[in-house]
Image (tube, rainbow, N blue to C red; front, side, top):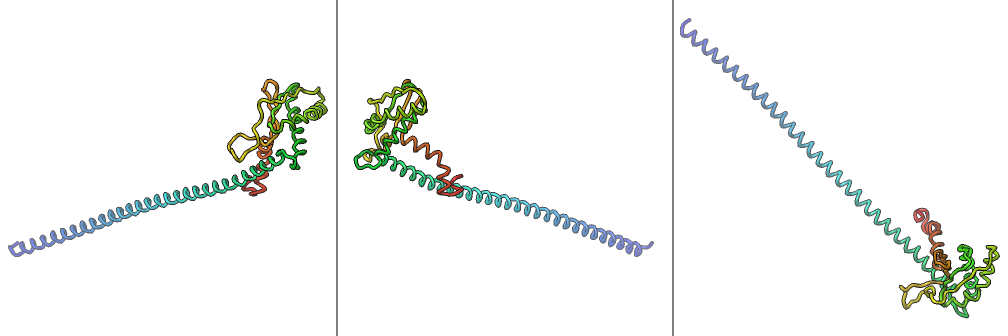
Length: 237
């Protein structure tokens, strides 16, 4: 092999090596670009996922806040409705108390005078039937004292007939009276619309039969019916 042939062969080997190197470099470049694109895509998808999660989290927080706000507004509305209903019911109770005062009001021109006298007798008889004691202490308003004493015999006689017992000893307390009727001068003072309180001699058994107590019991027992009548099923609930 002469120098010319050797030179040609060397040049061919150089071109082959260079071509092979270029192909290898191209493969490496393509592979690197693919890996870069894959990694970039993975990073983008990871960021998208993170953004979606953050958005869903905030969306849930907003939804929870809306539900809380709605619940608070609903409760506030319910409280206002219940308060308005209570105001109406209490106004009815106050009006009933005023009418009771008219029943127990003393005076020559009071047409309820005889009704109240009869009512006092019934209240005393009812207390006697509940207590069934041989001796009782009776307390009334000072303004009702004369009326109470005037009908004690009738009340005792009626009790004896109903209970089939001997007449009890009824001691009227003239030292301590029930509070007087309500006064505009002192609306916060203790007051009593009328009626009586009877107790056993030892004070262990007490029967409170004032008009105020009867109104309270009647009102409490009838409250569901009152609410239903005024406000329907919602108010009665």
